[in-house]
Length: 348
Ligand code: NAP
Image (cartoon, rainbow, N blue to C red; front, side, top):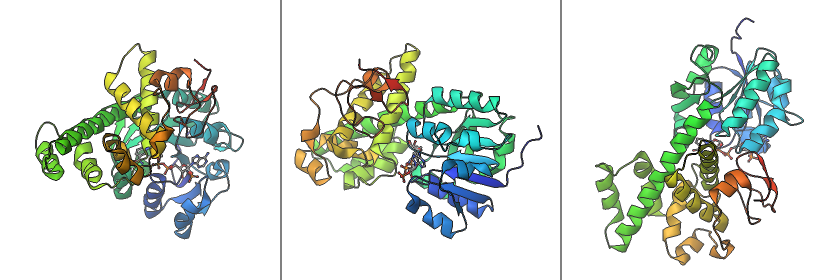
């Protein structure tokens, strides 16, 4: 089949990351069809010339490539395989590119299902955050090789500055989970450092500057620790998404008989933060767990919501939740449900 020349783009999920990516696609002159669960978040794009579609399928029908940038693996499943899903609506020979941080296993399933239908589905999670999306400098992690992705090169270049090819379906997602595991431990590291500094009467800004000059620093510390220190907990990325990513990573690691102690520790802390009302705060709000209760309450947390036992990450990622609480998928569940990793779980 002749490779598709990309002129028309569908986009599902115009949230914090998706909307600025769409702006770059419009700037580059692509004809853009957009869909989002909440229509208002696409209004600005429609004012700029994007075409609103009532369903993901409508966004994909005319498109040479359809991007998806939704929240959870369960959202990805809905958007691809649901009643108005893109997998059956997309044209033969066209591409579906999932930018969501999602399950590697689901990425492989979607890839295989698409190939059978003479379509292409590839995982392509991103890193660089809201600022990278706005600047068009995201780093992309493709679950395919460079030659197969060649038709996508120009359209991907409109919102990225670096593209890594990880060879085969699902491997882009695994690479992204590696990033998240490292990122989360960096946040825990700076949260520990700030707590010790504060308790010892050191000036937080001075300590941050000093650490960033040396081996203890990280990009997470450089960009997020000043926000934590100032009490700015607005989200560039939601705490609940980092919790989801850690659950996905722990599940993947468990399948490989691998223990990730840093990720387990970070997962437990993010799980507590989400349980007490911090799901939609920025990931830098982890430092609130080290503060006195009044500071947490002022930021919107409620410690009385904490379950007696913190969730076991393997329960969340693999075996189900022992208690009916907010899990990675953002809904309140009983004992038998779909969790953040996008698979159905029975009670452990
Ligand atoms: P977000 O602001 O919540 O955006 C997700 C969007 O997807 C929302 O607008 C949501 O609609 C929409 N959506 C969800 N399910 C849908 C469905 N079934 N049909 C149509 N639209 C649907 O989140 P985000 O920060 O952009 O993150 C998106 C993904 O990228 C997540 O997987 C996250 O982990 C990952 N990520 C985020 C960052 C970051 O810094 N923010 C960086 C890298 C990767 P509503 O408007 O109704 O909620």
